[in-house]
Image 1 (cartoon, rainbow, N blue to C red):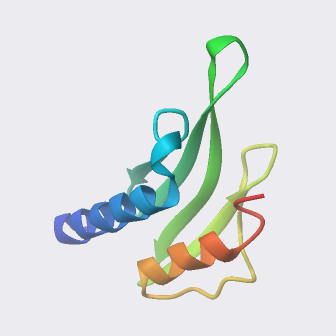
Image 2 (image 1 turned 60 degrees about the horizontal axis):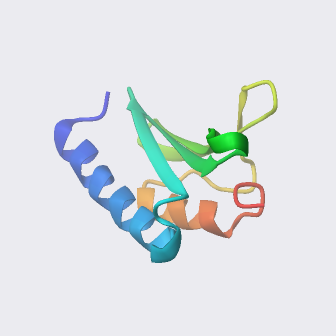
Length: 107
């Protein structure tokens, strides 16, 4: 479980990330959400769908394992897989930048 200070800091980092990621004119349509579970942070994107429905797509999962943040992607069977191309790092913000720059997350 992440301690309260770390969780609060990550929430602030994620809110800044979300504010910068989504252009103002799309904020009512496209949203990025995050969810904490133990030492894991899961990012997802919510978009408008057909007939007024909304769809939620997984973006990435960051896991704090052995004091390092590791990045995972989700396959079509909802299984998470470690991203070999992104080295584990102690810096959560650096891992967000890696997600931003990697085509598998924002195709």
